[in-house]
Length: 134
Image (cartoon, rainbow, N blue to C red; front, side, top):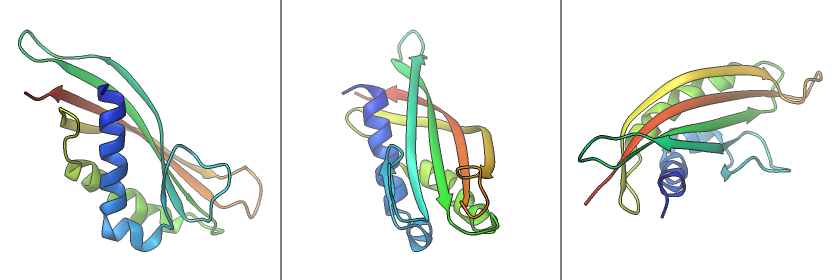
């Protein structure tokens, strides 16, 4: 299995297993859902490039994680955003790939859909460096 697919599945599983996040989110979706009850999280696109060394097969992945709430103010997003990084750290290796580092590259918070009453969305872009085990 490709690093992109294996690590994406591992991150989704880790987010779903995070009790604090799941206490406030209805679900963690694989891809942004067309319709879903808020609040929810989703794992978006995953871009991969070569990374590694002479004796190490590795990939650098750019993974997007989104959070959506329906409130008039974005206060709930702060707590939800804080739980994402520990969940990434807890993500177990999968299908021969293991995360060796995870770093937040950028995040943004904005109205979901742009209109009043539409809720809020946070989008976080992470750089994950992964290596093939075995």
